[in-house]
Image (cartoon, rainbow, N blue to C red; front, side):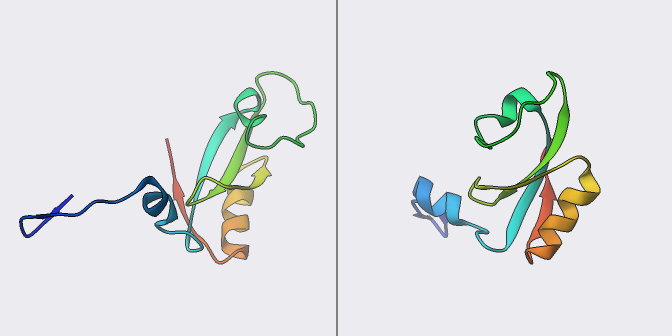
Length: 85
């Protein structure tokens, strides 16, 4: 990143911390993709789609069966939700 001709270096940790505690992202995911993010998840039928809410740093917060419930979870945690496609 360059600011007024000066190069600014941002570490991966600093980048991951941007929006922490303020922003969360909502994403529809296949159950197979969610197993690594939510290890305690019960067995579900292959091909099942769920909506996941993650903190800005990628930390999983909750799973929902629809986008409205995932968004409600963001608001309940005082987070501004954004959507990833």
